[in-house]
Amino acid sequence: MKRTLGILALILMAIVGIAPAATATTPTNVVIEDTAGVLYQPQLLPALEKISFHEPTKVAVYTRNGMSSDNFNEEVLRYARANHPEWISADGQKWADGLFIFAFDPVGRQVGTYMGEDRKVTLQKREAIQDAASKLFTEAQWTDGTIAGVKKGASLINQPWYLSLGFIITASIVGGIAILGFGARAVIRANNRKKATEHLKRGDAAYSSVSLDLDVTELNAKTIPESSSYGTLVLEKYRNFSTRYHEAGALNQQSHDFTKKELSKATNVKRVGQYADLAEELDDLDDVIADTNTLLNRFSGWEGAWDRQAQTLVEDLAQLPGLIAQPEAQGMPTTGALASLHTQRIQGLQQLAADFHAGLISPETALDNLKEIRDELTALLQQHAELMIGKYAKTSAEKTDMRKTMDRNRRHDAQLGRATILGSVYGWNMFYSVHSFNAGYSTARQQVDTSRSNAGSGGSNSGYGSSGGSFSGSGSSSSF
Image 1 (cartoon, rainbow, N blue to C red):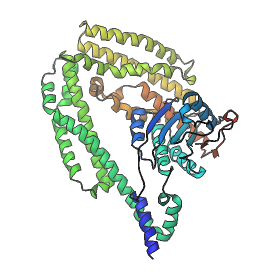
Image 2 (cartoon, rainbow, N blue to C red):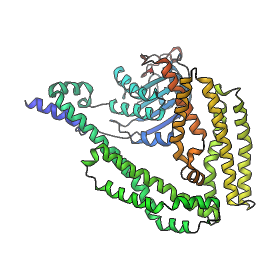
Image 3 (cartoon, one colour):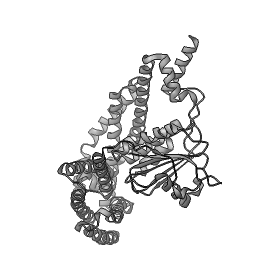
């Protein structure tokens, strides 16, 4: 009886994450080699840096665009030898100790996991890591899939015996379905509390920033010239600022009044998320109000305010060459138009900035010019999207699905420009960014591929091909 109770206690602690003696350490280093260009690093890097491993581990993420017929293990090894010899052991036969490599090919639809000898796991566990990512990869959620894969790897690499699947299954049999149900409920509640904590952290940071700048924001709003078309539009936004700030204050109080037990409930987590979203929206708006006042009145620091308005467009134009170079885009009339736009507007922006800094044009004219360029880019990207969809999709249903996916991604990315004057007064979803186009098209295309193939996992491959030689490092890959 005592032995049974001991096992039940250990399994319960393992499920809720409080098992004794297990060390937890974040990665010693994170290296991201996104040669496929599908990862959103502002989200990915912070997430990976927070993942806890059982032992100090270096994490490397590698992406490439290849073909399904490629020996993916061989290609990963080839890349490591050419670009990261430190990933390989001194004798050249294994992966370096303390290393975990997570790699995938979004075009060839393969995913692989590779470890140093002191971090290696069984083939079954490598497949579990790959499966954790594949579920998201089939929906072209590359960043989220990578995070899921690395998290799974962290949980399995050097896993203590009492957290192993075998022990949990054994203890589950001993303890019966009831203890598992209790454990699953505990996990869900723990995850809800974690989400609530994350929402509170970002909500409090934004709300604190808005509160500290409240008087300054009011002063900025009072001196925005109403004679300016942009000034009038921003002041329209400000008229609801006070009401929404008080709403955020009420949500702040409610969120902090929740007990630990109450934050275990999904409905309350959603409420805290609403608080965080509203606080961040207000934080963006007070930045816009400050920049509008500074820019329109040419107060001290107006140069920085201008740079913040132009920066998103500069970054967008810089991504056009990559979009134009896509193989499927060759020969399309919009490709030539986008190339011409890139050349002309890069030069035009430089001249616009020079004229504005020299006082040759007004702030309103400068912003009008930014909007004109943004409108032109949006129109061309919309035309290009239709041509690309028409070329890739084989049926009207596929065309509809691709349009919906790209539109959904465009709306999701609309928040990226919320802190700019144009994004605030017109709504960023009025514009189309190159980043949004690339991400949306990649997702739409992969979803069509998944629908066509309707294939599951393609099994595991552990060999390194003819160029691998005698290399025998721990690792394998599979298709998704």
